[in-house]
Image: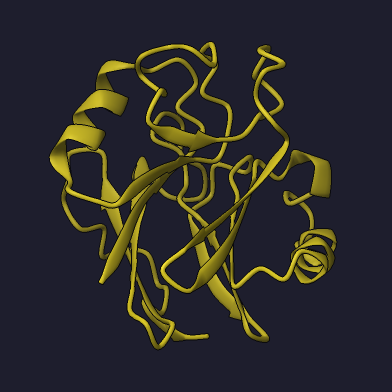
Length: 171
C-alpha cells in the first residue's frame, strides 16, 4: 500500500509542519502551496511542492505531476484555476493531464470528492482553516487496484471525523 501525506497553506509555520511530517511514515510528502518558505528551506526539502499565490520564491513550479504506484497525481495550489468559486477549470486541466488524483489548496477548506473517474482533494490548511474549526491535513493511501483511501487529521494527529466526506474511492 502506497501512502502520501498531503498538506497546504502552512503560511510560514515550520514547527507545526515538522511535527506533522515526523508523526507519520509515508512514501512521500506533498505541499499544495503557500508555504511562504524558500525552496531550499530544510522544512520543505523533502516535499513535492508547488507555488501558491503567497509564495515569493520563483523556484517553485505552478504545477507538478507525480506518478507513483499506479496513480497519476496532479498537484497545484488552485489560485490559477479559481477554486474558491468553482472546480470546473481545475477539472478541465486535470483531464488534460490525465490525472487520477488532483491535490490543491488555496481555499483553506478541506474537501474530498470524486468527479467522474478523478479524485479531488484539498487537505485544508494547517494554519488558518475555513468552513471548519479544524486545521487539517490528510494522508492518501492506495493499492494496485487504484482503491484510494483518504484520512483527514487535525494538526495534533487525531483523525478529523467531523468532515462529512466519503473516504474510500475506486478510480
